[in-house]
Image 1: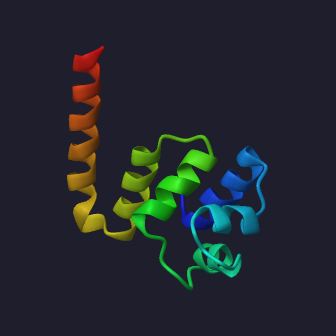
Image 2 (image 1 turned 90 degrees about the horizontal axis):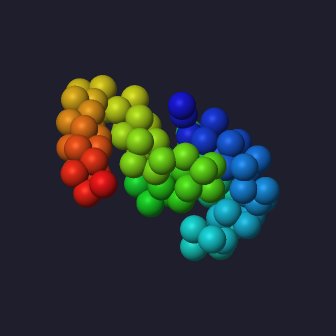
Length: 93
C-alpha cells in the first residue's frame, strides 16, 4: 500500500474530505494531503498513523508496511517490531 491508496481509503472509510483530514492533522491547508498523495511531500509517522486510523486499519502495521517499502533495508527491523508487539499483546490477553 502506498500513501495515495491510504489517503483514498481513509477518505472513503472516514467519510471525511481532504480538508477535514488536513485540519485534524494540524495543517492549515488541504494541499498537504494532496502533496502527500502525489509524493511531492513525504508523510511522517504521525500522518501515516492518522490516515491508518481514519481508514480503520491497524496503524502500526500500516506504518511498518509503508516504511518497509520506502526503506527495504529496514524491512526486517519493522517485521521484528511487529512480531514483538504481537507477542507482547498476546501475553496480556
